[in-house]
Amino acid sequence: MRLLSVPFHLDEHLDDFDLGVPVDAVVDAELPPGDPWDRMAVLYEQVAAAVGDGAAVVASGDCTTSLGVLAALQRAGRDVGVVWFDAHADFHTAGTTTSGYLGGFPLALAVGRGELTLPAALGLRPLPEDRVVLVDARDTDPGEATLLAGSAVTRTTVAELPGVVPDGDLYVHLDVDVCAPAELPDLLYPVPGGVAVADVLAAVRALVATGRVAAIGLAATWHHRTPARPEHVALVRGVLAAAG
Image (cartoon, rainbow, N blue to C red):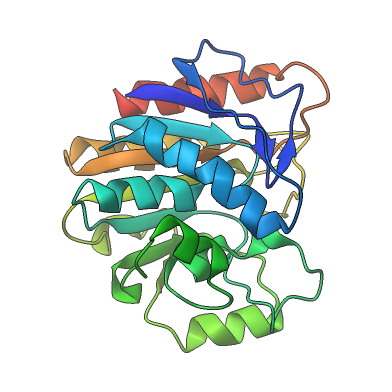
Protein backbone atom coordinates (compact mmCIF):
# COMPACT_ATOMS: atom_id res chain seq x y z
CA MET A 1 0.00 0.00 0.00
CA ARG A 2 1.02 3.60 -0.61
CA LEU A 3 1.85 5.73 2.41
CA LEU A 4 0.13 9.11 2.38
CA SER A 5 1.11 11.74 4.94
CA VAL A 6 -1.47 14.31 6.07
CA PRO A 7 0.52 16.68 8.32
CA PHE A 8 -2.41 18.03 10.31
CA HIS A 9 -4.00 17.73 13.70
CA LEU A 10 -7.64 18.57 12.94
CA ASP A 11 -7.37 21.89 11.02
CA GLU A 12 -3.94 22.76 12.45
CA HIS A 13 -0.93 22.22 10.20
CA LEU A 14 1.89 20.26 11.86
CA ASP A 15 5.17 21.70 10.62
CA ASP A 16 7.17 18.90 12.24
CA PHE A 17 5.00 15.91 11.33
CA ASP A 18 7.55 13.11 11.15
CA LEU A 19 6.85 9.42 10.63
CA GLY A 20 10.50 8.42 10.37
CA VAL A 21 10.02 6.67 7.02
CA PRO A 22 9.75 7.83 3.39
CA VAL A 23 6.24 8.65 2.22
CA ASP A 24 4.74 8.30 -1.24
CA ALA A 25 2.83 11.57 -1.13
CA VAL A 26 2.01 14.44 1.20
CA VAL A 27 -1.58 15.67 1.26
CA ASP A 28 -1.63 19.35 2.07
CA ALA A 29 -3.99 22.26 1.59
CA GLU A 30 -4.33 25.97 2.25
CA LEU A 31 -7.36 26.08 4.52
CA PRO A 32 -9.75 29.02 4.45
CA PRO A 33 -10.62 30.97 7.58
CA GLY A 34 -13.79 30.00 9.38
CA ASP A 35 -15.38 27.09 11.20
CA PRO A 36 -13.07 24.13 11.89
CA TRP A 37 -15.51 21.67 10.29
CA ASP A 38 -15.55 23.73 7.09
CA ARG A 39 -11.77 23.98 7.12
CA MET A 40 -11.39 20.23 7.59
CA ALA A 41 -13.84 19.59 4.76
CA VAL A 42 -11.43 21.38 2.40
CA LEU A 43 -8.52 19.26 3.63
CA TYR A 44 -10.41 15.98 3.55
CA GLU A 45 -11.50 16.56 -0.04
CA GLN A 46 -7.80 16.48 -0.85
CA VAL A 47 -7.42 13.33 1.24
CA ALA A 48 -10.29 11.65 -0.59
CA ALA A 49 -8.79 12.56 -3.96
CA ALA A 50 -5.39 11.16 -2.95
CA VAL A 51 -6.85 7.91 -1.59
CA GLY A 52 -8.92 7.20 -4.70
CA ASP A 53 -10.20 3.64 -4.63
CA GLY A 54 -7.98 2.61 -1.72
CA ALA A 55 -4.76 0.63 -1.29
CA ALA A 56 -3.31 3.34 0.96
CA VAL A 57 -2.09 3.82 4.49
CA VAL A 58 -3.14 7.36 5.44
CA ALA A 59 -1.16 8.81 8.35
CA SER A 60 -2.16 11.99 10.12
CA GLY A 61 -2.00 13.59 13.56
CA ASP A 62 -5.54 12.68 14.61
CA CYS A 63 -8.45 10.35 13.80
CA THR A 64 -10.80 12.71 11.97
CA THR A 65 -8.89 12.31 8.71
CA SER A 66 -10.63 8.93 8.56
CA LEU A 67 -13.75 10.69 7.25
CA GLY A 68 -11.90 11.70 4.10
CA VAL A 69 -10.64 8.14 3.63
CA LEU A 70 -14.13 6.69 4.12
CA ALA A 71 -15.60 9.20 1.67
CA ALA A 72 -13.05 8.12 -0.93
CA LEU A 73 -13.86 4.45 -0.47
CA GLN A 74 -17.60 5.07 -0.75
CA ARG A 75 -17.07 7.10 -3.92
CA ALA A 76 -15.17 4.13 -5.34
CA GLY A 77 -18.17 1.89 -4.68
CA ARG A 78 -16.80 0.22 -1.57
CA ASP A 79 -19.28 -0.19 1.28
CA VAL A 80 -16.74 -0.89 3.96
CA GLY A 81 -17.02 -2.21 7.46
CA VAL A 82 -14.73 -0.60 10.02
CA VAL A 83 -12.29 -2.02 12.56
CA TRP A 84 -11.30 0.89 14.82
CA PHE A 85 -8.35 0.41 17.19
CA ASP A 86 -8.30 3.22 19.74
CA ALA A 87 -7.85 3.76 23.45
CA HIS A 88 -10.69 6.29 23.15
CA ALA A 89 -14.07 5.58 21.58
CA ASP A 90 -14.21 8.78 19.47
CA PHE A 91 -17.99 8.50 19.79
CA HIS A 92 -18.78 11.94 21.17
CA THR A 93 -21.36 14.41 19.91
CA ALA A 94 -21.83 18.04 20.89
CA GLY A 95 -24.30 16.80 23.48
CA THR A 96 -21.91 14.41 25.21
CA THR A 97 -18.49 16.04 25.05
CA THR A 98 -17.20 17.76 28.15
CA SER A 99 -14.04 19.12 26.54
CA GLY A 100 -15.33 20.17 23.12
CA TYR A 101 -12.35 18.44 21.50
CA LEU A 102 -13.35 17.70 17.90
CA GLY A 103 -10.94 14.77 17.69
CA GLY A 104 -13.35 12.88 19.93
CA PHE A 105 -16.15 12.92 17.31
CA PRO A 106 -15.09 11.00 14.17
CA LEU A 107 -16.50 7.52 14.78
CA ALA A 108 -19.86 8.99 15.82
CA LEU A 109 -19.85 11.17 12.70
CA ALA A 110 -18.99 8.19 10.51
CA VAL A 111 -22.16 6.38 11.62
CA GLY A 112 -24.32 9.47 11.26
CA ARG A 113 -24.56 10.71 14.83
CA GLY A 114 -24.20 14.34 15.91
CA GLU A 115 -23.67 17.48 13.86
CA LEU A 116 -23.08 16.19 10.34
CA THR A 117 -21.71 19.29 8.62
CA LEU A 118 -18.42 17.61 7.78
CA PRO A 119 -19.80 14.25 6.55
CA ALA A 120 -22.40 16.11 4.47
CA ALA A 121 -19.72 18.27 2.86
CA LEU A 122 -17.84 15.10 1.89
CA GLY A 123 -20.96 13.26 0.71
CA LEU A 124 -20.23 10.57 3.29
CA ARG A 125 -23.17 8.23 3.88
CA PRO A 126 -23.57 6.92 7.44
CA LEU A 127 -21.90 3.56 7.99
CA PRO A 128 -24.14 0.80 9.36
CA GLU A 129 -23.34 0.57 13.05
CA ASP A 130 -23.52 -3.22 12.99
CA ARG A 131 -20.52 -3.22 10.64
CA VAL A 132 -18.33 -1.22 13.02
CA VAL A 133 -16.02 -2.85 15.57
CA LEU A 134 -14.36 -0.75 18.26
CA VAL A 135 -11.22 -2.37 19.64
CA ASP A 136 -9.82 -1.79 23.17
CA ALA A 137 -11.50 1.57 23.81
CA ARG A 138 -10.71 1.68 27.51
CA ASP A 139 -11.25 5.41 28.13
CA THR A 140 -14.83 6.55 27.51
CA ASP A 141 -16.74 9.42 29.08
CA PRO A 142 -20.18 8.74 30.63
CA GLY A 143 -22.26 10.32 27.87
CA GLU A 144 -20.17 8.63 25.21
CA ALA A 145 -20.54 5.28 26.95
CA THR A 146 -24.31 5.74 27.00
CA LEU A 147 -24.36 6.46 23.27
CA LEU A 148 -22.26 3.39 22.59
CA ALA A 149 -24.44 1.19 24.76
CA GLY A 150 -27.48 2.25 22.73
CA SER A 151 -25.75 1.64 19.41
CA ALA A 152 -25.12 -1.46 17.33
CA VAL A 153 -21.34 -0.91 17.42
CA THR A 154 -19.47 -4.01 18.60
CA ARG A 155 -16.89 -3.49 21.33
CA THR A 156 -14.10 -6.01 21.69
CA THR A 157 -10.49 -6.60 22.65
CA VAL A 158 -7.59 -7.38 20.37
CA ALA A 159 -7.62 -10.97 21.58
CA GLU A 160 -11.32 -11.42 20.78
CA LEU A 161 -11.30 -9.49 17.49
CA PRO A 162 -11.07 -12.47 15.11
CA GLY A 163 -14.57 -13.59 16.06
CA VAL A 164 -16.30 -10.29 15.29
CA VAL A 165 -14.66 -8.88 12.14
CA PRO A 166 -17.33 -7.54 9.75
CA ASP A 167 -17.93 -9.18 6.39
CA GLY A 168 -16.97 -7.51 3.11
CA ASP A 169 -14.40 -4.80 2.47
CA LEU A 170 -12.77 -3.21 5.49
CA TYR A 171 -11.32 0.09 6.57
CA VAL A 172 -8.85 -0.47 9.41
CA HIS A 173 -8.22 2.53 11.63
CA LEU A 174 -5.31 2.47 14.09
CA ASP A 175 -4.89 5.22 16.64
CA VAL A 176 -1.50 4.43 18.10
CA ASP A 177 -2.67 5.29 21.61
CA VAL A 178 -4.36 1.88 21.67
CA CYS A 179 -0.86 0.63 22.48
CA ALA A 180 0.53 0.48 26.00
CA PRO A 181 2.12 3.85 26.86
CA ALA A 182 5.09 2.02 28.35
CA GLU A 183 5.88 0.73 24.86
CA LEU A 184 4.97 3.87 22.91
CA PRO A 185 6.10 7.00 24.75
CA ASP A 186 5.22 10.67 24.20
CA LEU A 187 1.57 10.10 23.29
CA LEU A 188 -0.76 13.09 23.23
CA TYR A 189 -3.44 11.34 25.28
CA PRO A 190 -1.97 8.22 26.88
CA VAL A 191 -4.35 5.82 28.61
CA PRO A 192 -3.13 3.36 31.26
CA GLY A 193 -3.14 -0.29 30.31
CA GLY A 194 -3.16 -0.89 26.60
CA VAL A 195 -2.11 -3.50 24.13
CA ALA A 196 1.39 -4.65 23.31
CA VAL A 197 2.64 -3.19 20.04
CA ALA A 198 3.42 -6.68 18.76
CA ASP A 199 -0.17 -7.78 19.40
CA VAL A 200 -1.61 -4.76 17.60
CA LEU A 201 0.61 -5.38 14.58
CA ALA A 202 -0.31 -9.07 14.57
CA ALA A 203 -4.00 -8.11 14.53
CA VAL A 204 -3.46 -5.73 11.60
CA ARG A 205 -1.53 -8.43 9.71
CA ALA A 206 -4.36 -10.89 10.25
CA LEU A 207 -6.90 -8.41 8.91
CA VAL A 208 -4.80 -7.64 5.84
CA ALA A 209 -4.33 -11.37 5.25
CA THR A 210 -8.08 -11.66 4.61
CA GLY A 211 -7.55 -9.74 1.38
CA ARG A 212 -10.45 -7.45 2.29
CA VAL A 213 -8.68 -4.36 3.68
CA ALA A 214 -9.27 -1.44 1.33
CA ALA A 215 -7.30 1.16 3.30
CA ILE A 216 -5.65 1.75 6.66
CA GLY A 217 -5.79 4.92 8.70
CA LEU A 218 -2.85 5.56 11.00
CA ALA A 219 -3.43 8.22 13.64
CA ALA A 220 0.10 9.08 14.71
CA THR A 221 -1.08 10.70 17.94
CA TRP A 222 2.25 11.43 19.53
CA HIS A 223 3.81 14.86 20.12
CA HIS A 224 5.33 16.11 16.87
CA ARG A 225 7.81 18.52 18.41
CA THR A 226 10.93 16.56 17.46
CA PRO A 227 11.82 13.79 15.00
CA ALA A 228 9.92 10.57 15.54
CA ARG A 229 11.30 8.42 18.34
CA PRO A 230 12.64 4.94 17.51
CA GLU A 231 9.50 3.35 19.01
CA HIS A 232 7.29 5.44 16.70
CA VAL A 233 9.35 4.59 13.63
CA ALA A 234 9.26 0.88 14.45
CA LEU A 235 5.48 0.98 14.74
CA VAL A 236 5.03 2.79 11.44
CA ARG A 237 7.34 0.32 9.73
CA GLY A 238 5.40 -2.54 11.29
CA VAL A 239 2.11 -1.19 9.94
CA LEU A 240 3.60 -0.77 6.45
CA ALA A 241 5.01 -4.30 6.54
CA ALA A 242 1.61 -5.62 7.59
CA ALA A 243 -0.11 -3.62 4.84
CA GLY A 244 2.10 -5.19 2.17
